[in-house]
Length: 316
Image (cartoon, rainbow, N blue to C red):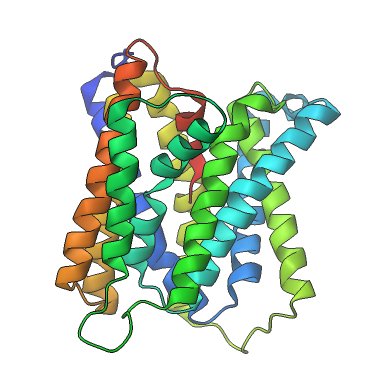
């Protein structure tokens, strides 16, 4: 689907927002969890974002817009748990274990690779280019874990494992989404997903007895507000708009750009090291994503987006 009546300027603006916002959320998460426990803070983030989305949609279309069947509500809640509570929740936990924000973005970028594996396991025959992308992605992951001059890897294995698990959970949600009953209104569905994820993560925070360490600084509050307003609302809206006004191949470029933005911001703001291993491993991972996404775009030349691509609207 080519750019609609909004024109190239509007498409460029929306794409720039997705590039910058979704590339910066990993830094914002890191700034928040330095002072606030990850499950509780991210749960509150999603719940507040859901309230903002609900009010915005109600003003534009009335509260009747949220009427859905039990099956649709259940499907949206289940998807929210897979994508946001397990996906984003585990991402924040992984960062708490010492994984740099830039590396986190690179690990998360492998979602298209994992989706390809899920498809292959379910009986769908991937294209040769997709299989090549999977192989390259696994090599890139191995490179990222190489030691960098010390006796062990410079990356904490537990943190990396948790983030990979979060990426697998998000990918499974993306793969299974077409098989679920979901609200027809994608914005309403996203609101229910945010609500369910927020409730589950806040419950998990209570069960694990996360403790808030007294007063929270302005930097953490600012990062939290950024995640709620920009990360979960503005970024989502811009992406959803792009799916209907720009070619999928163009929209999918955010999967290549976001990790680059994340690495640059992590280095500039938090002085996260940009080592040769990170550069080489990151380049290999991004190449794998390019191969997989390119193969999928060629397989569906006439469609604006497939279900897996739509699911990535609210990745973070």
